[in-house]
Length: 382
Image (tube, rainbow, N blue to C red; front, side, top):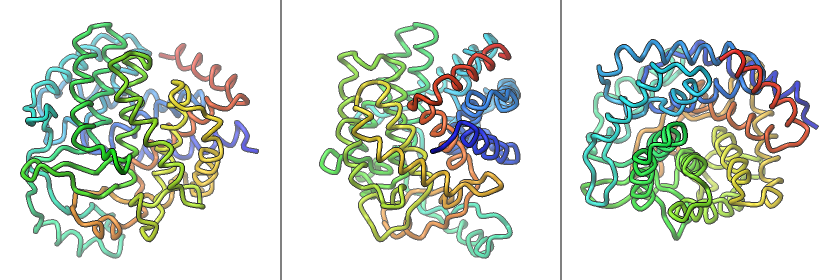
């Protein structure tokens, strides 16, 4: 039996790792890392993690109009959550400015916002200097092919949830419409209704997805769907496509779970390695979908419990979630995903771990009172 103290200890150790991470503000994965730190405060009652996120975001606001290449990956939901707790109008104004920026991108003929015009195909990851392959990977980065404009499954998590949360906090209908305008075309391009899973990306020049059912990508996509659903209203008629994705995908994920409790990095390829961030993403997705009554949690309790068990077994003594793959740039070759090295200490590993711990604790009665106490403490601090 996992105790409240165990969860809080794991959360503290995992969250402290992110204090030493070199945030790019912004890059793929930053958003879930900051959301994880906010959840660490909610789970432990320690305001240090909340304050850290608050400080990062306040530091970003003065240069918000000085755009970087990946500003569309900015932690919009975290920004709004901090505003929700503090009432700081500067944060809300920053969210409005970010919304204008996000709404200004061109669209594909399918209506999907095009965020990445020059996708770096098979760009190698940034390995730590002490990694044995770091030098060869550094040299390989100069020969990367420009894949042209592509729509990525990661954006399902960056776009729809941000606009949906902004609508939830302000009541302004334009943001609800923008949430759906973003996420529904992304689903059309990326979601494979035969496989009941997401492809990693869609290529505008060919009009086709890449054909690889990358596991962490499905975590990004499904978490984006469930977040958007949560904040636009889970029972509304126009949210039915989102509910349908969850009802179709989650049974498939349950069937694909490895006996270890996590999932293979290519979901339908049991020869590919088991990757740890998958367990974290899917615990969060399943618990949230159950809270919205999209699925009955009892039908997935064993799946969730096994995934949580995997996570707890794979958190090292220093708090790092072991077995997380490095940043995975796009490819049409499945072997690219199979060969991606693991051992990353990153926001896309630590962040989902923290969000999963909080979601799981909220779905388990024995943690309910502790979670309520922690939320009240953070609210008082904010």
